Image (tube, rainbow, N blue to C red):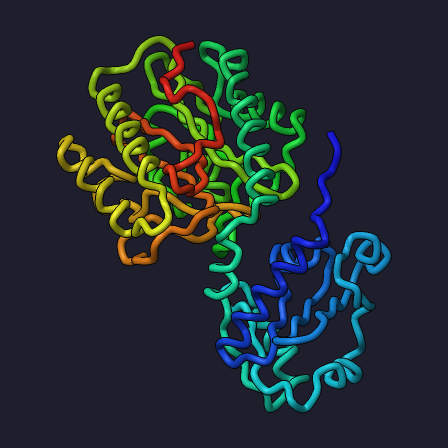
Length: 392
């Protein structure tokens, strides 16, 4: 399986769009330290900092590994990171307003640069950066299509893994083994602090245990130190089994979930699953440029309410998450978010994972998740696999 390098034209276009936004906001340049942002704008994820002036050529300052960055970076001016005495001289006296991504900037890094670049004003460009990255180029869309297809292929193999009485961790091991065999990179990157996760394999009452992960389903986990995902408990007959995994190829994520069951499920859970699929299909049909994110979320809430399931939608009553879909790309939690208060309109080429789910304490979770691209004709489904419950 060959590695797909970012074309140089991609990086040039990304830098150009960023510079246009910086100029429009009167910011003299942007300094990036977060590895995923650096990869997006350079093609390398080596330990480095990236300076992008509002006009002119960018500069990549590499701490380690400079030799590898030289072979990967698409920035012409890629150089070793300078000493603290030398660094200020790289920023002319005319550089007064510098953009930082405060959403991921460690205080230690901020203090370092603020001390060396005294007298400058530091501007938060987190939203600008996330908005730019949310719209995928044709090249990125193809990467997402490949990831969606490969992830769906792994999910199609899950019935071969499920055995009566197996532990949740055993099923998780079988799924994750197949993801790795298929070449998935495995590191599910999330921009939100402390939200690391490999994926979810959870079943029965354990799936309905609340947790700190910023999503509708967390799972019981193995210990308080790892309070999400699969437990060491066996899967029982008749319990819904939820698998929720991202697959990553060439850096780009696809996200999906499916419901499996050994034996049969109760009619009430089957009904809720059907409602989740109806919500997904309604929203997917409306993933069109200009559709308002908040309106799509409220549509989902209204459908859940009319089905008599408002208290179970996207978590347990009192601890429900307030979204039904999230952007993704190089990270799992990109813009846009289908949530109350997110009033922006969708844009052509954004990638969104729709995940309507219902939680029933003591019984389990049912729902569906697929990754889509926003197009003029509605959502283009990338994780192409039947949405049906799979009976093992």
